[in-house]
Image (cartoon, rainbow, N blue to C red):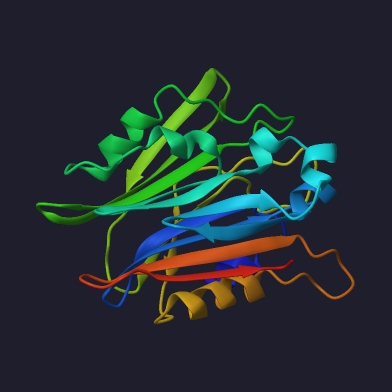
Length: 234
């Protein structure tokens, strides 16, 4: 995971789902270039983590509909994570395949209505009768309209899958993520260590602008409360 994130100057928003030892993992991070994108932070409220503004910059210079949103929701039987308000389509998680649940909940969604046609990325972990199941979904612009793609995430210890809104290149227009989710290694042992590793990996080269907004992670162990960590730049 660390080497992958180090290779990206501007991934936009990204999520990772997988397994670290006996913990099921959801990790999410955000980067930004504009003042309104950078003037945000993650806040834990009850069983949810919200992306919100630190002052009036988002309201005065940005689009709150796209910049402020619930990024994560913890349910009794799982977790949903997303880069926008499409997460509100997921009001509960059912005892069935995660991939099908995401495809159904997000079937009417499109990419974000901004100049880059930013993809909407969503993921979930859900406990089923057959064990824990996980999936990742993306809605992105395509030559013939809108592309909906979803993947089952293999929950193998020490492994995860990564997806982001952009390719990682710091160019304009900013290209959307292409292809399938990328494999990453998860060997951190705790949410706090995973978040710090992700945040540090996104540190800019000396003398260049810091695009980091923040990262959070949830480590889900059976029978105990979730291990949650948040690290904001501001």
